Every structure is written in structure tokens, then in C-alpha cells.
Image (cartoon, rainbow, N blue to C red; front, side, top):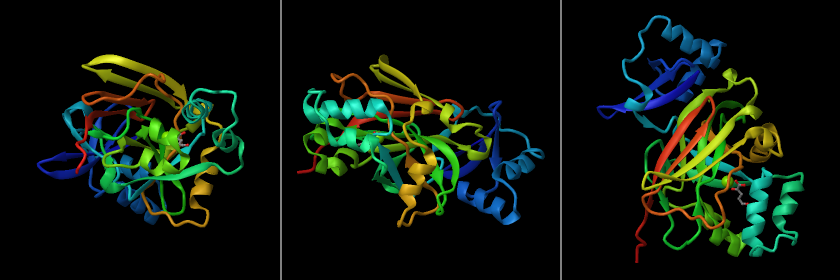
Length: 295
Ligand code: DO4
Ligand code: MG
């Protein structure tokens, strides 16, 4: 079971999407209200949804007919880094100019007990399905980072799983690790959606398949796939470092690192379109736009 938000006549509506693709409007204001109601009643979000849908008729519309919104207005999005071998190798290439025999801080963090966790986005910077993502005006090497997102409550409980894009500037990050915030955070540099898969309906979160496709003039320029089974760490380990001596808020999203990196010659351009699909969650689609630098 998945939960989405869509808009009709400027009104945001929460809805449930069954595994068969039937969509039912829900009376709760948002995903967190659904979770709160379940907690108050000592039951689960799935049970609450099943009680609603047994007495209602599904929408006539299909998912692709709806104007989808971010499934949750995450107050903060955090991200994990170098959690997959592929990410370590790509970052070593950036940092060493291709001298792959050098040992770097990326090698060290990949093997260290403490994972890399960084602040990625706020609600205002986070885009939803079909909304524009921006590329930086001062970078010549930019990529999407397709990542599984954990939707958390303030205690670090995993409420669900979503799709996330940790847009990144490889040349800025490669120039100096202290530039990481600028390589990761700018206007519209993150997206999440299209749905939240309820955690209780996921048997094994290490079996998600992630696929990223990049289109240029609607021709496929890149496609890559990986699975969360390739993750070097465990999700609860990442959450425990995020919440250690920290305060997080209900609805925080933790991105869990990238396992797909386009070829080194590739950089995103104005007009490209990014699709990130995660099995049993959905496909997050975002057009890419250049932004004009303010003087
Ligand atoms: O080390 C910098 C960022 C790593 C990252 O975003 C990733 O591995 O996904
Ligand atoms: Mg990343």
C-alpha cells in the first residue's frame, strides 16, 4: 500500500494506492495525521486505510492523470554518503582527477564505523513529482543521485519509503570537500515522491531495485540500475547516527546514498528529464532547468 498527495482545484488531498493501482481518497489531512491516528488507536496506518477503503469507491482517474504533490512536506531532508561502492569509486575519481590508486577520505568513510550524514534540504527547496529541478550556474559537472528515502518520525521510526534525488555538483565537490554544502544544496536541488510505501507493507527493504533514466530531447541518454541489497550499511545504522544527540522532526526524510552514477563525461543540461524508479514505490519524474545567476 502506498500513500500519495494530489491537488485538484487548489486543494491538496491525501490518497491511498493499492498494489492493484486503485486510488482512494483519504480523509486525513496528510501522511503524519494518518500515522498519528493509527498510533492513537493502537493500530497501523494500513489498518486505518483498509477501514476507509472497504466503504468507498476508488477514483475513476489513474495515477498518471493526477497532479501529484510531494507525498510529505518533509521539514528537513538529510542524506547519507558513500554507502555504496559505486559512490566511493565515482567520488575518488572526482577528488583525485582519475588517479584511482590514491587513498582518499572517501575510502576512509566507506570503511569507517561512523557513516557520512549531511544536511540536504528544507521543505521549501524540495520539489515533488513533475516539478522542475535546477542545475547550478557555476558548475560544469552535475548529476542526479537516485536514492531510497526513509520517511521518519521524530524518534527515528521508519514510517515508509520514498524515492529521492540528491542532485549533486561533481566538480564543486571534487575541488574541495569543504565545498560539500554548495555541491549539494541550492534552489530546487532535491526531489522526493511520487509516493510513500508504508513500512509495514515492505518485507525486505534491501530488495528494492532502483533505476535511473535521463532523457535529452526525449531520447534516452543514460539508464542505470542497482539494488538496495548492494548497500554497505544497514538502514537502522544510518538512522541511529542521524538521531544521535540530534533533534529531528516528524516527517524527516533520510536519503540513503547513491548506487548509480552516470558516465564521467556526462553532465545534466537545461531541458533534460530525470526519471528515478524504485520497485513497489513508483517513478519520480522531474524536468531539469538552468537558473540565471543573480548579479
Ligand atoms: O561524499 C559526498 C556525498 C556522497 C553522496 O551523496 C552519496 O554517496 O550519495
Ligand atoms: Mg547522494
